[in-house]
Image (cartoon, rainbow, N blue to C red; front, top):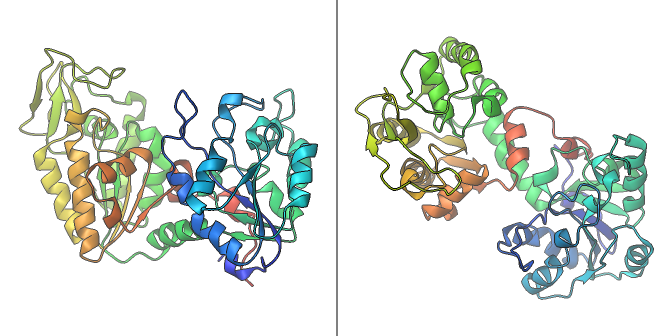
Length: 416
């Protein structure tokens, strides 16, 4: 178990907090979704209650080590101030420049300072000015960040799978470090799901490619009672079984691997559920996220997809089959949609699964949802408040499910 914020002394201390304020901005640089900011409020409020001086560290976008005005964290400060009902200072231009250093030094207990985008510095991602990997440069940057405060709190789950200066490197240069409430919650739900699940334990995995989820599937095969596979990657498994998939997206170079996974599932007595029918279309406008005029959309009778058509969503028989597993589950982990979710007409299967997961949760199951489309699905279905835990870190939650060590978590000290 890692130390959490309540395990360390933050009272009257200057506390560095790594947050994930990588928020979406419109053309006028207005924040269009503030959920990542709101998610950090419990940790910030706790620190304020402890009379700490708070220095917030974050990145936004991918400026590739250069100062890009459109990726400044400047719009975040007033939104955070509005949510907290308290002023938030912001230093524009440079996270570790002279002005930022002075602002951090002058910061009083109960005050909040937000530093500029860390990724304006190539050293944050372990590179030098030439863009080459440079651990010494990263360590020097981490040390400089650490010098601004006394203790460090990791509350950016969305970045803990990165071994960056502000996620892993900074820990060795501060007096003490711990996980914030947001990271603590992520570890609690994801960790319990994988290490000590109430059974039956099922995983629902969707998305386009088997290659994106190979490690997740292989790690989960030793833990779950059943796996539901949806989305385009289901067609790779179906084709591996010799079933016609028409023009559906298939990774032909992964067919042998798909067969190996199916064999492992059988050996481990894990129920491996694939679609038994499909919504299919002969034309899809992927760029415009629409169904083109004149396109033929229909439902198959069975799992065979005819020539000239591609699978775009799980059919009603598939959803009914999946429902049997979901309804009896006590632990559910879901990552990835069951179809081309971004097109309204092809989102029904995913939305239906979202409702089923919520119903199971209402009856006592623990549900953990991660991945952008899955999160969008539970919100679209209006059931997001009925899910046990919605993960804030897409890449981080995926790597956690793969069984990988997350550098930003590994760096934190263990509880004594």
